[in-house]
Image (cartoon, one colour):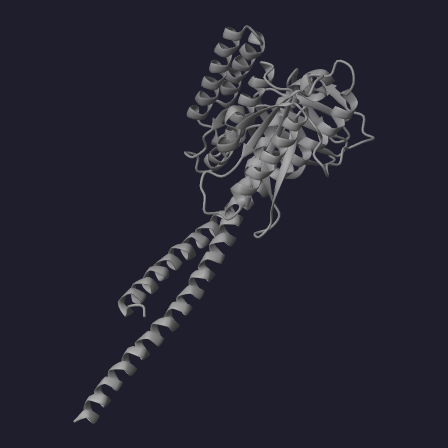
Length: 133
Length: 290
């Protein structure tokens, strides 16, 4: 299987830069898997599990949002918050969900973007289940 | 003639000052390395982000573009976000940023525009408040923050975006010092709202992307993040600049203290010699009188 360059960066650090064969991305409209020679695509992310398959196995990361840029020979994921799946703790997720709850309440007050805030909250809860903490 | 004891005390006091400035310089050097690493780490994200944004912005410009990209249609009210350090003793670092912001504000006022100032960092607030008290709209306190993280940038960005949504201003500019090297930090003004592609960004042109969900949705999602990203990289640049400026300021202070000690020591030795000579003269003339 052909390899392509995979980058996972967050504003604070670069989490991964390696040759991958397959990347499963939690896109805003649903999961998608990118392989070599994928059509150039830019997609936003929802909170979820990003899973990278490379020669030595599979790595899973939790990403909280951001976007992914896919070209024929490279995939760059720019995540706002990203952690290796094993490092995610219950407290960390609870903190994120508490933030999302606060944003939801704020949205309810202002009456703007209530559905979006609700969706963020729900996808976070789904992501927490997927991480299994 | 200065008293010998006074001189000795002064030498001691300058010596302890030198010890302190030397220690501060070394602390700043260690912190500088960390700050530079942090700035280095954030670079891949910022570069990719700006490249994608540049492509998107070029494609989506024109009618119906989000306000964060195309502006509100006027540029009457300007928000200046002045980012400085929480602490002083770093040479001209805080002063230079404040000076740039002040001259910028004066220019805008001369054109009849309204200026609002939001400060990040205590030193900038103190300096700006004196001259632009009536334009001052808010302050972000980072004195409790040990290491600046993306969350801090997001909080500031949220504050700025809320003000923008409430129609409080049309154009936002951030002021910070770009880190060149330990001796040079360049005070910089960068417009963040409406979004402008930072200089030196190469857009990937020629690639036609598919957008999911849609170009507009992605742009609407990314523009607020762009504000946070710009603020975050400015905070990191500022962090490195502050430590660099402090390091060279303390290096100078240490050197000055050394020179002062040398000078005082010479004076001390001369005075002591004078005292000895005086005593000898007294003894000899006493002996001759016998």
